[in-house]
Amino acid sequence: MSAAGWILNTLYGALLIAASPWIAYRRLRHGKDREGFRQKFLGDVPARPGARPCVWLHAVSVGEVLLLKPVLDRLRAEHGSLDIVLSTTTQTGQAVAREKYPFARTVYYPFDFTWAVRRALRRLRPDVVALVELELWPNFISAVHERGVPLVLLNGRISERSFRGYSRIRRLVAGWLGRFTLLTVQTEEYGERLQALGAPADRVVVTGSVKYDGLEHDRSNPRTETLRQSFGIRAGERVFIAGSTQAPEEQLAIESYRALRNEFPDLRLVVVPRHKERFEETAGLIERSGLGLRRRSTGATSTNGSQTDRPVLLLDTLGELSACWGLADIAFVGGSLSRRGGQNMLEPAAYGAAVLFGPNTFNFRHAVEMLLARNAARVVHSGEELTACVRELLRDEPARRAMGERARQFVLSQHGATSRVTSLLGELLPADPGVSMRRAG
Image (cartoon, rainbow, N blue to C red; front, side):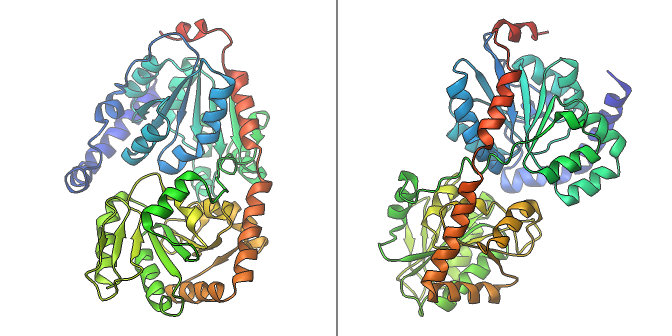
């Protein structure tokens, strides 16, 4: 083991000990971090049998997992004998990966201890490793490089904030990036940032973002229709969805609905918290508002409030938000009035919804700039602005429809990245299944 590996192990160990009270609290209070501990800490993932070529893709959580659908579909279509390993960091991401991709071998990504990453690599024997968006873990990168396995950055992006942080340790980052065989990025700007951090220019390829290719744009798709029936949304009703929300965004959406529901008798509200741990908290908020509550998970309607008609609809299940956006006439995308940095506003845009979000959207700066430049989205800065904007759009139906159509056309114009990415990955995969066995050592 290199000196750098020992230093990193010691540093990680110290951080793990320091964080142990918080980890214990999360396990007891929320049930987090219980599952997959041996896989994470020891790299004790199930050994992959056989000698078929294998690609290991790592997606941190739910957003990255769902992003991979068009890539995985195309890889399976073009490489029928390919073994696909999909790792996640979060428990929620793992649950969604298992549900959405039953054909893949789903595992937890190992902590960046040398023993964990080496054991995981020995047991999985990948022929290509692809990290989604940007995951730089030094020991893992070194272990992949030492085994001679091509390492790919897939759909790479790097925010201005991350760029500034990495710039402080540019020498280290340059060494890590230099071990990538290929770095595919969403935009020229992201490519320039990686090169400024030391990525070899000849390995950086601008492909566009695969997230556009995987976006559903047909409102009549079966999953959306199932949700429409489950929620009891009738023909002619208009739907306001507040999705991927964090506190206090649920409360602001509820207050907007309270202010607008009498003026617009055809208006319905759907609330979709970002994290499952807040489903019960949000249900409590709705019940205390006196508006009534209908939950997707149970189908039950609570009408113990003063209002018994048009209850607020709570999507308290995992993996259904992307389909739920297809119900939206107006979509507020959360994590943007908090300090989260925004969530994926391209899903509702693809359906032609009128998209709203707060000012804190640094995680999706490029998409936000493109939508705003086309007058295909609006920024709201407070609960009062949210209410006013929703009211304006409900009163001016032609303007709302035109705004949504501009968003939809923008998304459709960005298609094609999946084909480019999978073609590049395919060039790195072995033609001979026996190659996988030669990496078993």
